[in-house]
Length: 130
Image (cartoon, rainbow, N blue to C red; front, side, top):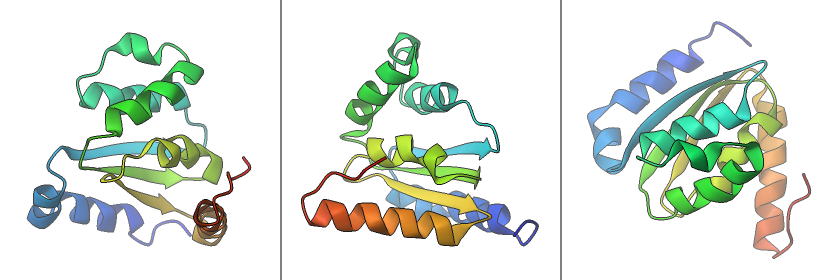
């Protein structure tokens, strides 16, 4: 459902003093939209942490490299306006143990169902299917 203030609420949370203090390596905001460019979005996160642009020359390289960059970070990544759960997957898979992801979407039910299924598979020691 559009126009109910999801992005405004997420922005207020991201700008809050307590949030900034909790995520000492920073808060990164990326608007995903209907037709995102995954490589460019992963590059934005990498650059925010001072990584080299060459590490994001193609999607496959970026998917391998970004988890290494985020491994020791304490950060919040906000993905705004996610239309399809597959658009969030590269970020979900790249998060370090102290990173968090905040997602705004018009279809939370589908997103939550997919994320819950992946979380349960991880708990059971099985790899999620993409």
